[in-house]
Figure 1 (cartoon, one colour):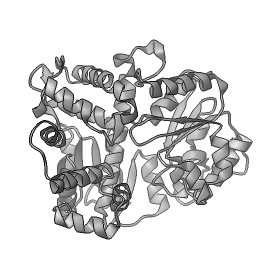
Figure 2 (figure 1 turned 90 degrees about the horizontal axis):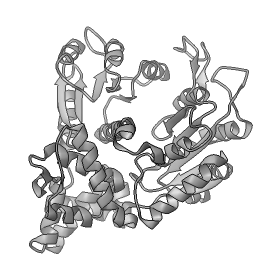
Figure 3 (figure 1 turned 180 degrees about the horizontal axis):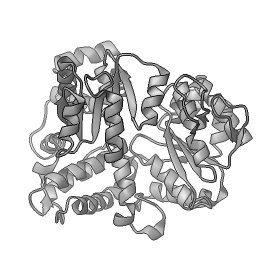
Length: 444
């Protein structure tokens, strides 16, 4: 993914370039909006971190120029202050999100990762008609294993019933694909499907995006905005990361589901809705209810039918099918003739544990096809982590410390360097984890 950083402060440009380059992104920096706009004439950018307070053309003006010409470019605004009016104005203009100075690198990395995931999903959705048999209605969900066949059976059974559905599964297992499959096989298939990520937003932003607002509802609300739930009436609303929705917002969503109507922010007259709700989470929602982090009444409203997605390790027999499918997909995308995977590379791909599930497998194959020089994927085309893994499996034995360092590094990568989640997965106290990070040179 190609990332641009546009900020008049050199220290900001240097810090972000260093942090994002370490994550594997290609990063270009610009000191002004004019410089960035000129570069777009001959350069492609997937994500831009754009300072609002630029000399000359400011960030809002750059955003206004860029989004109509490059609608697929995601823009995250950098601001020295964080007011709801400024944020809403930015999002109305097409910004993906915003960050306030002083910048936190973990937040920058997290947002870049979310944009990367979003772009992969958009590309996957656009490619459905090209790369898949459209008659089966399953989207990019393929497999022959018993666990995935059970998921197919539940989708087929629940799709026509028009009841709410809760999808639970690890990150990267395909929760939104399940939701889209249910929609495509329902009576609502010719109406709108909307997806909303409930994580990482304030209650005010969620309310304005879901319910919309009336003109004059707050400072900066110069026009009435229709919320995404209203635009999707008659169709399906997919609420991703539902466990991360603020508790106060959960109560508002519950009323919408029960009463089948919404109230725009600043309005007095409710609007009737006809929506099917599908929610998804990678967390244990029942545990969240027990710990009073999620409303029990909303849980029962959403959990009319529950679909649990298996991890990729629980459906290992599907890995060869997925490998071949993704090779075909990305060979077409990159206009390459890749016929398959060389034997040793295939053995590595079949024996790897995939903590990131199907999404990680797809990313590996996309990278390998992009770098492949011959007609088969070789070990040299695989990511460095997997090449090291191949040495462990098919070469010399590693010492315990080498294996521990490699495992900790893999978990860190999976959690986006979130030390709390890493310590929980490794079942280590944070102080012990920190000592090991320093010992193995992973603390940076």
